[in-house]
Length: 322
Image (cartoon, rainbow, N blue to C red; front, side):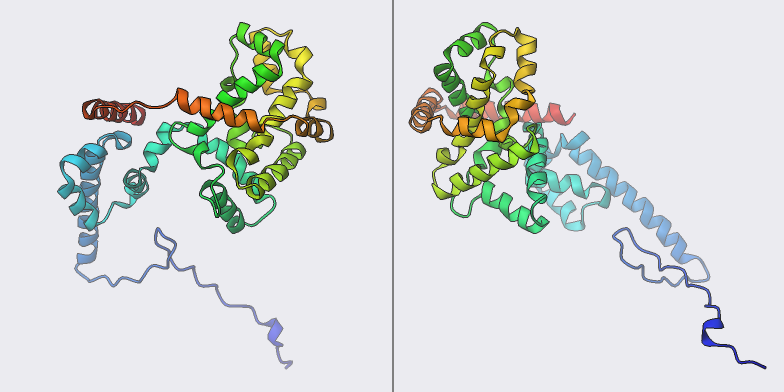
């Protein structure tokens, strides 16, 4: 009788995969008693957890609308419940409320989508870790933070840049500036994303990359905030100059569309960028920065006024969460 080769033997049944808990870890085996006490205890724990979740939901309100009230008026209750552990189904929301990130999200609509294009651009050329640290360098800075003010509450740096760009466009292209006035067009209607994403949002990729080459080099070589971001102003002005004769003929609706959708020939980096490099804006940008700061100096407010402002902000956030 011929011997069976090892290869001829069929493998035995594959054991079922070990059960995992909600975090992806292997569950520990539980020993059940004959009287079913484990089953009764599980049912009791489930009901207790449901009651606990309901208490938390009542405390935070819809979308976190009552959280600030409880933290301020009943901090001992909040502290006690957190020390007992935040319910699993609410932990993500509670972490956002504790850190204040929920308020930042509500007060800055659209910033995440600006930031998404920025992150996507970096990830094409480096690992996730490297892209993370480049973002940190841009937002917090190894030497200085060139993009930090772009994403603060109220987008203060964006507002400054739009003021500067509006004045530069009117001075550099007076006929187009007059047409913008007649049609009631201002840079916030078409140029905000230029500054928030440094043209990575809606520009052709080959052009955005060339702009980023210059932006990163100048922002870190010169160590001067406005010096590096000049490329955004220069490219914007170059685009308006290139399309000048067409733009001054358009009514409002078509003008806005054209400012958000420049023709393909205007987006050729070998044509547009040399035109941008020839535009000198350094001195005027600094002067306009000082004008903006003088224009927007905040007078010292009374304590009562500041309290009213705070209450108004809290009402705004509550309405947004609802």
